[in-house]
Amino acid sequence: MKSLGIAPLMLSAPATPQISAPAHQAQGAIWSAGPEGQRKADLGNGTFLNPILAGDHPDPSILKDGKDYYMAYSTFDAYPGLLIWHSQDLVNWEPIGPALRKNIGSVWAPELCKHQGRFYIYIPTRETSAAGSRNTSWVIWADHIEGPWSEPVDLDLPKHIDPGHAVGEDGSRWLFLSDGDRVRLSDDGLATVGKPEHIYDPWRFPDDWDSEGFSPEGPKITRHGEYFYMILAVGGTAGPATGHMVIAARSRSIHGPWEHHPRNPLVRTGSQQERWWSRGHATLVEGPNGDWWSVYHGYENGFWTLGRQTLLAPVSWTRDGWLEFGGDDLSLPLPKPKGGRAGPHGLALSDDFTSDKYGIQWSFFNPAPDEASRLRRGNGVLHLAARGAAPSSSPPLLFIAGEQDYEFECEIEVDPGARAGLLLFYDSALYCGVSFDAEHFIGHKYGIEHSRYPNPLGPRMFIRMRNMRHIVRVHISADGKHWKRFERTFEVSGYHHNVRGGFLALRPGIFVSGKGEARIRNFKYRVPLDG
Image (cartoon, rainbow, N blue to C red; front, top):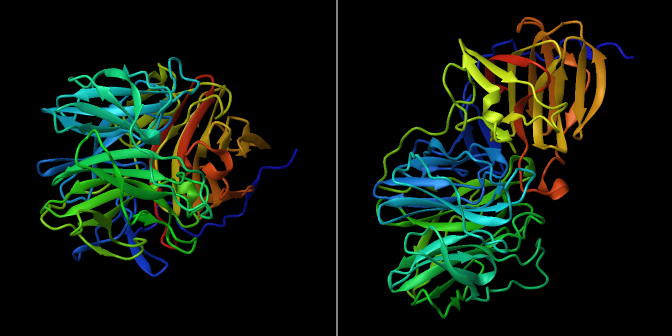
């Protein structure tokens, strides 16, 4: 057996390096990042730079409610899920809390809306290994955006995804669905009436364009002036960078007929040289001073691993009664929406475990019904009970990172029979990281146990992982001050949807398997000075 894979100290930063908010250059655009949290969109000079929510925040659904804006997005296998975000200026966003705690499957593009004083979220899901999950759409509701939210109600829509809520000129309620279909809703919005019907043949792009497929989805209905406008995504949400796009149609009645926008597509990535790839899945929203905007998503050039990030672009209405999207490829600063009030943005991703960030920062991957019982906090310590034999069978505790270069570390102590460590996790078949028990270090690569070494440090140590634009270094320490480089270095640029499928992102996290528990202290997340 090889000796312990820890090389001489190679990371020059001390245990607690001085961190400032660095500026990063990306194709002529400068963005800033806080040392412990979300990349900041607000540049502080009357402009902003996309993304407004960095990292894995795809399929944004946005709601304007007076002076307040709320947004939800696809959360897939992460539970608690459907974290709701709040803003009053469309640029600065802070989390409120999760709306969904019961695992009903992989949560795809939701629809957040309000009707007659009540909030609703319509939720399409794909079946997973979770008990009771299936291909369908659900609805939950609440009288206050903070909750409590109802238990999910199954709407029995197994053949459609991406519902968009609409109210007709006659007061009827509808869900517009993928493939140009729709279904009537009951007056209370908690059941369907009849079967889905086909009402629109979406505009088709030229055959010689490179896309993942036709895939008309994400229909969002906005009533403006004398028309209903339908905004759709076509071209597939991943695959070639040029595939995903935004198209539009309009009708004077919710019942049609619908006419194509004469200048479709309204949004499309033109080449792989642009900063934002696969731009699409848009929703319209009125700004604080009455102008119009859209949120949609895109992959950052070269970083499918970060998932689809939330982008904000201006919208204008033309004399012929149509709309146009501004901002081009969104690689440069744009004027902020006027009239709003800037608030806090993002959340600090370091955690001393003195407050409960479960469902705000942390979530389990495809958890069992009792997964939350594995967690216990006390005196600045997170107690995480062991489960399963490896990250593939032990749902890890994960969070979303939005930086191209970041590091995270913590102190971990394991019981006899327990194994714990840090991961970069895509799904239960694709991850990498380092774990340990009292006797061994274990290297995980490609979703398997890849290497094993003797552990001279025993059941308690500090672990640090740095994801440096897909090159992943690991350091180990007995005291959190003197660090040694782990022998294995990982390369993770292929840990993404176009390789594995699933539409997920590569998330940092912690796992504990075996028996007993692990105790985690002083979790730190930071953007290195040399990043």
